[in-house]
Length: 295
Image (tube, rainbow, N blue to C red; front, top):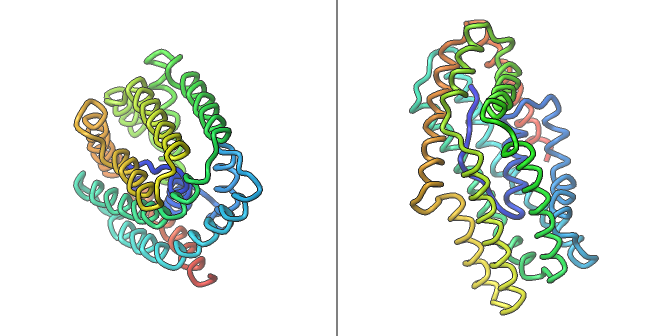
């Protein structure tokens, strides 16, 4: 089965969380190599946003190494257990509720990474300069331009085609080639989706501005580490649990849609396709347990 999460992290926790879950559940043929390289990949990803100075670089690298070591020992066994549970479900039919329950448990693991990264993220945030925040603003602008090109400058039909191609690649990598009927079901799901790229873009920009205001406030007022951590925690929680409004409504609708569509697609697969899914899950679990054993 293919699972989704509505949670998106921030700062250090975001890159670690996204890459870890991708390594654990994504269509990757070199999970162990990808996982072991996470500190390096994460460092360069963050550096692209903040342009670390000579004093920050060794601290950030060390914190990323420590975060991965903690994750290897504490979180990988939990993710491997989730994969084992998914293996038990995959041969049969599943319900929307079962898929959502699994998505929630994955989200809990991402939240655990976020909480663990908060002290290091706070220390980094308090060390940022005006020049680095200007770099962050430029990076946000570049990302927004890329998002516009990828999603907002397309017609509704082109957006649907792009999303269909993405879902098709992920689904076929997991189950094997889909039949004509299965592809039609996927097309129908995409056509009926509540996904709104303009709403997502507005929320992205809002959160970017909120982050810039927050971090510039740190530069100006020099809060204590406890005060800064509380502020960052509140920011991350507003991303994890958006306040009432159009964005929260869409997130909840997309979550239910994803669970419903995943269950429908899975229940429409053949025995051989489900066997392929089980083999995938077994391979992922084996890789993760080897990673735990080689710490």
